[in-house]
Image (cartoon, rainbow, N blue to C red; front, side, top):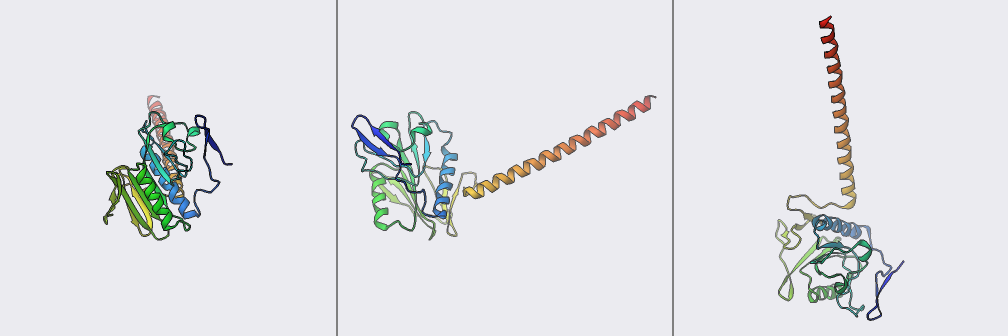
Length: 233
């Protein structure tokens, strides 16, 4: 159900949903979720930041027509991190902070003109770093703020070192590859789920082995006690 937020001061309504799904296809959705999960891991412990996905950003109070919904984003410099209930849209005059990072994952319906408008929007309203990824063609663009402009960056063969997210981003085959400083690659949600299942299975196996070893140790201790008792007879 579409929700709206009313700015009582100016009686302005700021919609919090357009009724559209997060992604137009499964591939786009998986990439967005991967970015959201990875960004949550990177910024989840910071007291001045939060991560969002596919939510409206209203940079100008009183102008709900000036808006965009980034596929994934990071807000920083918050006085306090808002509750999930208060994150239906990002309104800097209400929540504080600023939009530091944005990523767009292209869908088949995105046009060149639309993406140019988004680039101009992010440049005008202060985004520091902007990624654009086309999951169909495997094409990646990275833009970083230099003064008042977002400047497209060259992506080296071993990946681009993000100055604001602190990760390495590249394209492997036609997949987006994002790596933490320790080398761990951000995984798709389905892969992360399988990895977690594997970790749980291994932990259960190790626990079972530990229980078996403890049982054997108890049996050996019992036998030793029996032998000691017989020796005293």
